[in-house]
Length: 365
Image 1 (cartoon, one colour):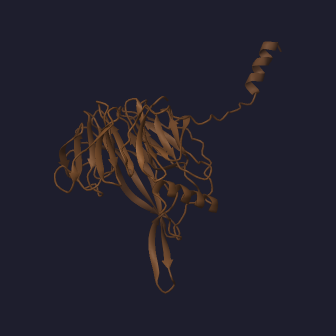
Image 2 (cartoon, rainbow, N blue to C red; image 1 turned 30 degrees about the vertical axis):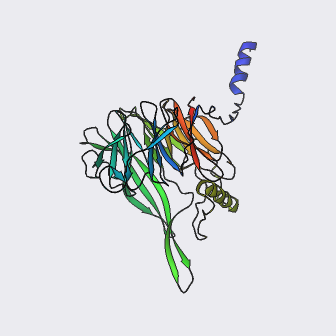
């Protein structure tokens, strides 16, 4: 055997050593807003660079100019036209428009163009009737993505698991297609109280998190599954790509993990956060949290990982359109990404008192 052939054989049979990449960090912020927020639930960048900011704890919607440092409140609290009683999500629409549910039940919606409220929509409005109250997003062609509840699955021991269909609604609202089925969170009936006065309580199981989906402005849809952990992609022409299984260790939920969950909960919610002692727990820690999916401007999916005792930081998995992990992004424990712009990531940063401020970072995948 010639030396060159021998070298080729050696290369073929040598084991491949996979070196874990260190998590990346965002570049330093290029703008900060001194305005204080209780909890930034969503950010939507407008075409002129200003941003809509929803604070769901204060029930406040504002438009901010990070260059000038100005913050102006939009609309007012109420139940009339152009008013809102709750603030939570901001859904991107084409034409510099935004859709926002205006109450906790999502029974009414506000349509904004730029920073102006231009219409109040009821659930039976032709533009929303197909989507109902569980809108996921819209794309540049005007299609909507929504969730429809499916019959739940009854499990042993008083447990049940929800299920949802991911439906794509055509631009003219005449066609609806089911494109995926998602496993929902698990609930469990727990008997609490004393033997003389028992109380039956239905709880969502801690660390039981639903599968999720998100629609990108260019029409691509990402569907993230908890177990096995993977991300599937559906192109605008409905062709589908099944992603490979992504690494996750599924840590067992021990007393150590329960204590870690409580610590993270206090950091996120405040010192009064406490779970009832009878609260049921899942057997393992899932890969990602509730409302974990973000559509990055470069077409990547950004997935907020679940926190556990081995993850002191806030970590995100960045997944490309082949379903592969591109890299892991690590932020400080008191930081979280709350939205993206055309070239930016917006991060809410909490101080020691839980007051949040908004920063803008260049998004460089």
